[in-house]
Image (cartoon, rainbow, N blue to C red; front, side, top):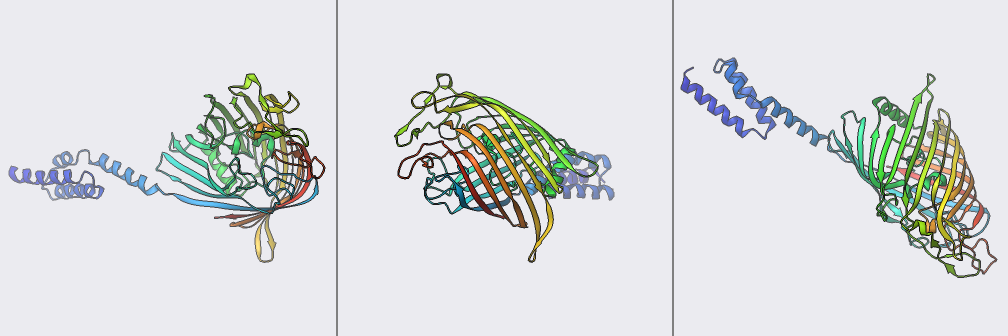
Length: 475
């Protein structure tokens, strides 16, 4: 082929290459044309290589972009929990702060019947190989100040993204509002948990189990696979929060801004293992440290028949009190028998009702935990259903303070719960159990300790028996 013809062909192909820089299909076609011309002898291999130089890397780049967009999908799921409680013994005027369906006509807010405890929708998905997103609002929240008269407000629970430092997702960083990696039951979704409420001793570590911060998670591939296996078997896992976790967060709880310019630091190590028999165990240790400032210091009734008072804040806690804990966790997954236990110790701000005329919030110690036994019965048949039944018994104890509640009130708990969860189908679950309560009433405005017609004291201890029932829909 003469020089002029070759120049014409080269110019034509070069023009095609320039026009197709942004189009993967055009890039492939251009390469095909050049290869065809080489096979026909119109171009030499050297000339073809010169014309397609750099095209392979451009094609790879375009393919990666297309793959990214193809994996950018958002999944939507959620669940709804409806509760009902029947009181059949014990003191009057009680109110379980974590479940407003517990109480009677003398409890704050009047009679207790049906309650929507949670109505949550989860939006999640991968944004390519390096990032994912997770957003969860709850449409059945009761913000502070609405107790008794206000329910079913929308409130943010989770809003975070995961950045994967390695493609195998062994190393990742989570930034946003998410669960604080402290404890096993705290990390366990209420959608999977057996008991209706988390144990006070560990749940009091972080308001709504969540906070705004940044967390590093390390999860080896083998551990990821074991976590996935636990989830697939329906063994009540906590989810993948790393084999090792380290993070910093505001420390004031979910949906609250930081108020003392101080970070909380948390770390957790958990190790799951599987025996030759197939039984899976998991043991962990965790701890956190920071300064916590009680946000609301509201009036409360200290003496029966008297007016309300407002506690003072110890001078050493003006910029926050020492807030630190260490806890241990153990899980023998139900195959079919299971055992779950946690305990923690620490220091926290707390109300000493006997200090001063109005009581004083000062530095206090705490300890407590729980033990739960369960038995998983698969292929449980009733009528034409074929589901799973998990009877369980749980004991919890707490001698401490709930820093996020009004006035960081003292909380003594010694409860028993006996019942069962019936997984009727993947879409619906029913939980029913007897709850023997001996605990502090953290909801202000109660009257269970005073004669009829008189105002009682707040933060008093009560004893009560209740049958608690919850129906859950998964979608």
